[in-house]
Length: 452
Image 1 (cartoon, rainbow, N blue to C red):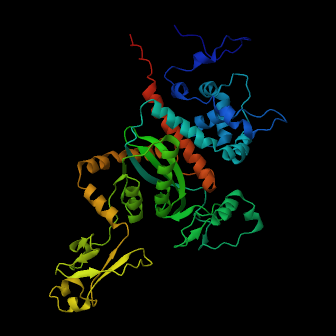
Image 2: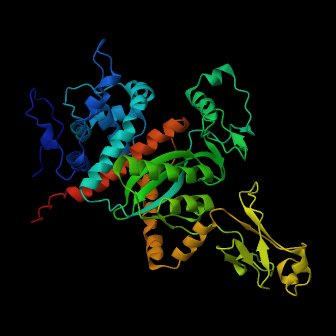
Image 3: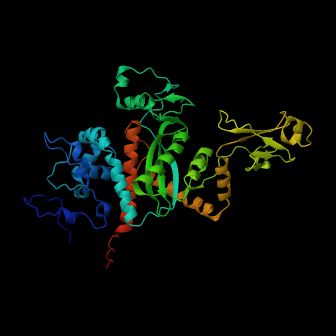
């Protein structure tokens, strides 16, 4: 017997409970069980006036943003449209069927004002990290660091060659340009003072011109993650222009901030060779953190002559001895390339039978030594240990987080411009990733009934 046709909506009143419409195993229901934003209104209170019309609740806006980044809806206009018709979204945001969804312009006004003045996105992220720590997801002993390139909201076809731009009054009125010009005068400018950028974007000048992205060349930002290796919880996140020097500097910032905010200081840090610079390794060793990082070493020669590894360093006497048992000494002067020079005697080299294999094109052999060479040697010794091998395998967890951000959360191209815009998007993405892990650990969906 054929059933009655559906679509009859002639009832005047409905008995309806929004709570019953959201399945128990829905992702938002499980996230809601571990998300506590009751503190947010009190935190934001000083940023609201006691006069004027009532504003949109900050907790409502934050929950809507989390919904958007959880389901790859980063357009605030589209997010408002989706919350309008999706019952699960309404339930998570605390909206009833008749409650009005905020206008999309409310988000941009608060993002450029109250949200950034209060740094509320970072505080929400850190609150979620504390929840992960309380749930036992953070071990606190082994960390990993890495960066991934995200395309900026700037066309690679509209660029200015070189680093000098004659800004028009109209361009100077734009927020990303204003942020860039102010940052140039700060202690940490967005460009590398030693190497000027090859091209700049007039719409987002902080974004770096790079060949590391999806297209062959593009403007991009780097999302820097510091994760705990036990359960791949993101402990800190930072946005930088896509330059290796900025990514390495961000590592120090994230480690110091994690210790300050959470009292977390790792015993070891895993990373790839980009973090194996002498300065980075020296900083880690000085802070009692074992670098499980390949050493960035270009001293190996491939022309058949002796490499620096063939010379023995005597720390007590501060000198090198060559394969011919001759000594190389230094004046103690630190040169412009941040190295000391250890030089052999020309008299010793002229009479040495090994000169053709040592310094055939120079009068005497020279060995450069970085002030952090002891940290490099310490790291080389760590590279032979089982703990280093284990960290190298665990470091792949951070790559999976980047894959999740790009493939599942659609974080392949930014929507907001400027370094602050990139920071906002990266914080929300990392917050959602941590919330998913916390929800999966804390809540378990009920078993499905067996089919008859």
